[in-house]
Image (cartoon, rainbow, N blue to C red):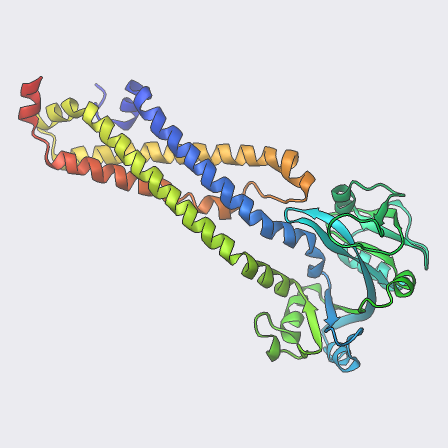
Length: 386
């Protein structure tokens, strides 16, 4: 004979009562995990677009100068871990992001340095050719071409650019495409120097061992403690991966706080509602509990059975909700987000960790409600009513 209080037995006998609760949990997991993952996708998007900072670092002069001062360049060169230091000229092309059109740097360096950086990044030309010296031409990586819907021969920047900034006073054509996934764009230094006379020049450096780049960045200008590094913050800024991530997450901190408050408010409301549902289900089964109490079941045994049943239902709801979230986010990733310049990771643990309290809080609310009813249960009175 099957145990009448078995969670599986009850689910089989009463699908109309248990399915709504599971459904509510699935919806709450989907809602919370989706929102958290989409918010965190802003961080992922920026880190993906500017992933080239994992391979080399920009030193940018402060506004008082068009070039990084020689003494600051010497500080960089004197570090024994540094491999190559080069001057670069830049202009911008607009890309689509979740925050609208955003300027992305097109880097102009000498041919030798360009080939060095391309090899450093691990990319190569897959279509078209490299830009000709002094000509308004550029090569872009495949992700940029996809983002801007470019093909060889199209304009990547010009005086009629919409949104973002006007990247160039003359049209600049895409003459080649580099294989991805790193977002990068190159032009010739001779063209950039002749066309963008008032744009500050940057200093770019790499390390002999690529794994040393972050350590060198921290020595040159530590994140959050810029005055403690070798470089002078009054003369130069460092566009390093660490500084980029730090500033990004600092700017998003308020959004994360709001999201956290909203998510836990939703969890509280869902838990309260689920506790009410559990109380209703218990009322519908109160005769069953009364009979079992009358024939000798201890209240602690009844409580443990209720706890196991509720925990099973909430865990099942969480697992189904996580699976539904993963499937839907995978679809949205390719169909909605990536074409609009937004990167999203359907398996991002950041989103799912916000849903971990759901089965525990729902179980706590539900079991606390039922435990109160069990404590006051009078089996004789209930059986006599029948």
